[in-house]
Image (cartoon, rainbow, N blue to C red; front, top):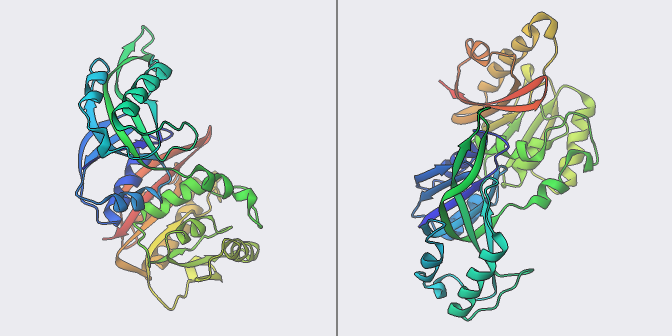
Length: 356
């Protein structure tokens, strides 16, 4: 079947990278068939249950949909009439239009007309509040008009993808897990969405052992825990050591160990499958970040002793630290990097590493 994925557009590269990393982790075969802003389609032999598992633990994916038919806005009505809706709608349903960009689309009229036709053809009821099935019309591949100031505006669409929703992101999860809602809070904690993305970029499998050697308040480990893994964390600050234990236990996880320890002197009695971490930065910006670079190099050398040969490390760092210089004197190599603008003076780099 063909799958249509609606990605977050808050970052240029991270949503796609996370999606592909998760596909790789779950051993789902795929072939990308098209890419537009915020939309990726791919074919796959995977089952719907596999796709539900894929979509249930992604930070930067909004929806995963089954492609029913691809058409143009002009041919939409005819395309809808070519579909045997009894294959897709066998209980209550609703129709929703999704515009990728701010192109002019008469959403209400389209939803009413298409919904009315499907109701007549399938003999199933429309339910706008609690439907069992959502038919989504994705307007994509935008037509752009560029003005004299080189500003682009969406003036129409070249394609409509008729889809059935398989899974939608649980936004409540990220809202309920905001750092300030945990028993122990410290300013600067990573957002749950980015924490989950980093866990996914580290190719974390169910049953793995995951390490965060700068665990802080435990945010990354909490997101990893939802994947059914064993958690190991450490922090040099006692307040973080105590706070992370409190937060992780509060989430109901039991299979975890937290150490009050400097990562450079890490002493574990086991190897780990994946590492996701957000080391401190800004220690010595007046010295060009040299102190931070030294910390990162020493930390990575320590971590490399414990990660398995095929394990991945996902590491956040500030833009002013050259990670290629950091890894020169380590047994690790950088596979990919993604920029995340945090505010005016700081861009975070999320890098994926593994052993050379």
